[in-house]
Length: 272
Length: 286
Image 1 (cartoon, chains in turn brown, green):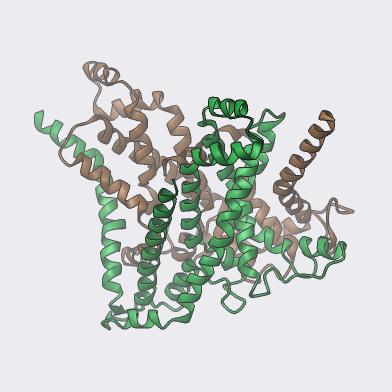
Image 2: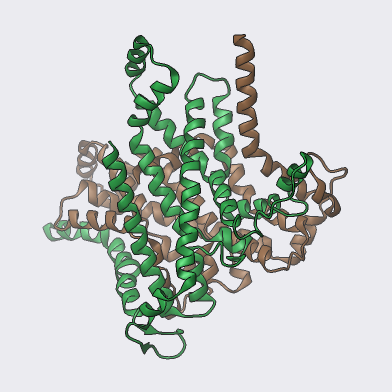
C-alpha cells in the first residue's frame, strides 16, 4: 500500500515537471519539423529538417544580434560588478559624511516604479544623441541599486583586519577592492554576475524604445519584431527557430550552473 | 594626504551620484514638468496646464488598463501562491531527484519572456494550438484563449504564473526551511493532522514570504508589457492593454510625451498605493 502511494506520488510529481518542460521540448521539435507537421505535432515529427533555421538566417541578422547581445550584456555585467563593488566598499568600510544619506537614497530608488522614469529617460537618450547606439543600451544600466546593496552586505562580513593589513602593505583603495575583497567575495560576484547578465540578455522594453537600426538590435528585440512584424510570414517554424536561438545561450548556461542560477535568483527575491 | 583620504570615499561613490542625478532625480522632476505640456520631441514644448490630467480622467483606455491589471492580479496572485506553495511543500519532503524537479520548475524563470510568449502564443492557437487540440480530443469545444475578450487576460495571467512560479517555489522553500521542526513535533504529539499543521504552523510562519510574493507579483502585473505586445497587441477590444503597453503606445507610437509621462506618473502612484494597502492588510492579519 505504501509503495503504491509512493509510486503515485512520483507519477504526479513527474506530470507537474512535464508541464514545465514539455512546452520547451515542443518548441525545439517544432523548429526542426517540416512546416506542414507543426499543427499536429505532439512528440516527434516524421522527419527532421533545418529549413526553418536556414530561412531565419536568410531573413534576419540573427548572428549580428547575437554579437550585440553579448557585447551589451557583458559590458553591463562588468560595469555593474566594478561600480557596484566600489560603491559597496565605500558604503560598508569607509566613514564619510553623507554615507547614510546615500544608502537611503539607494534604497529609495529601488522602490521607485520605472513607469515614472521611462519617458524622461528616453528623452535624455534623444538629447544625448544616443538613439541607435550601444551607449543607450549600456550606460543607463551600468549602476544597479540592488547590486550595490548586495556588495555592501557582503563586504560587511569581511573583517576589517584584512583591509588594514593590506593598507599597511601599501595597497591603495582600488587595490584593496579588486585584489583583496574580490577574491574573498566570489559568491557575491557570481550571484550579481548571473542576475545582471541574465536580466540584460532578456531585456526587451528598453531596446525596443531606443534602437531602430536592425544592425544594432539585441536578440530579444530582433526576435520580438520578427514575431510581430509579419516577416515570419505566418511560418511558425521560422518564428519558433528564432525563439530557440534566443533561449539557447541562457538555457545552456543554466544546465551547467543550475545551482548558482537558483541561488542567485532566490537571493535577489529575498533581498527585495 | 589627509585631504586625499577625505575625498576618496566621494570619488568612489561619484559614479552613483552622477547616475542618480541623470537617470533618477532629473527624470522624476522632468516627468512632472512633462505632465503640464504637450510635446512630440520635435516641435517646441507647449504648455497646456492641466489638460493631460483632464484627459487622463476621461480616458477609457487608461481605466481599462487598470481594470485589466486588476483582473491579471486577481487571477495571478492566488494561483501563484497556491501552486508555488503546493510544489514547495512537496519539494520540502525527503524525495528522490529533488534537484531535477526543482530544476524543471525553475526552467521558465530563466528563459526570456519573449520566448515564453512566442511559445504560448502557439499553445493558445485557436485551430492547431495544443490546448484546443487537447480539448477537442476529449470532446470539448475550442476556446478562444487569446481572441475572446473575456478570456484573453486570464490566459496571459496563467502563462505568467507558469513562467514565474519556479522562483516563488524557491522562495517558499527557503521560507519553509525556517520553520522550526519542534513545532511540527509538538503538533504531532497533540495529534494534529496534516492540514491543521499546515494552517496553524506553516502558513503563519511563512507569512513574510507570502507578503513578498504578493508585492513582487503586483509590481510584475503593472510591468506587464512584452506578453500583450507580442500576443495580442492589447486586443481584442483593449482587453489586454496593460499599464506599460499603454504608456509605450502613447509615447512611442503617437509621440505624446506629455500624456505618456502623465500616465507613467499615475501608474507609479497606483503601484505604490496598492503595495501599501497590501502591506496594511497582511500586517493586520497577523
